[in-house]
Image (tube, rainbow, N blue to C red; front, side):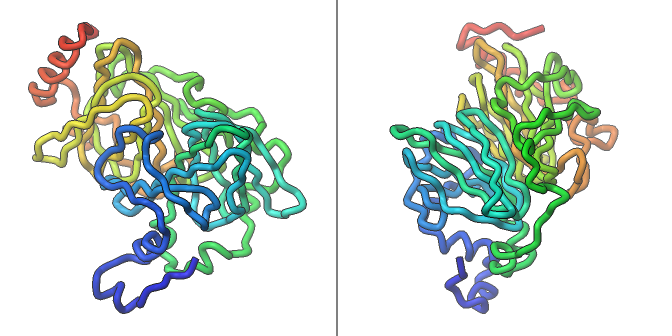
Length: 351
């Protein structure tokens, strides 16, 4: 889609190429720090995509990545497309299939449903299909479009580059159905997760007693994901990192505190379907105040195999050069707020 804007005007107002590109799309833009319910985000017709959508331009992206929701009408398919930025896709609702190809006569098609997670191989062509004749399917996508569009500021290159990244996707029959493999450090390397809520997790006490986690590598991308769970009456240690981690609540009830160093924490309540994106190097901390374990999916930068930004040491004590505040060093008000929230719901603090 060409940019219908005077580039000198963009320079004068400080807009980026990505700003211009996004403003050319006639869909809503959701801003702020969090979304209370992804399923409730209002969408509008998006002819370019062949569905209805909305951008999720939350403060924490830092224009390093972006998010959008896309609705696919019953029995319909999206428009085929390809692009030079990475894209992670989480299925919010519905069931369907996606076709991916380098050669249009040789497509690989796999099925998905609510809770599925996959990545579009870089610059491969793809198309989503809604398998239901009655219900709309909704997907959440997180992409590296802002970084790539701003870096090259040439949309013809971004959307029409003929190069095939066969080292990432070579049309293998089992690309989206093959068995994944476990890598060191709680990492699961795969191209498709049928249901992220069923992914086996591994203990990671360093992020909070009883916390479990699994890192997910997808389609040899530099973007990746992880799933974390923490028990009833517990919370995660405060930590900080770079921008763009889209945290999707899968289950549980709670809240997140976020604050810049030296600033006052801001509270954002959440439940299943909520989305939180912590800003660049803001401390943030997740609290489970419900009567069942809380679980979330984070779609983010910095895969274990292909680093893009510096590792921020999220599980290392800030006193030793890392970016995690240990429980003994946190502001006492944080614990007091948590205990009050639990007491109001009749939930006991875990020991």
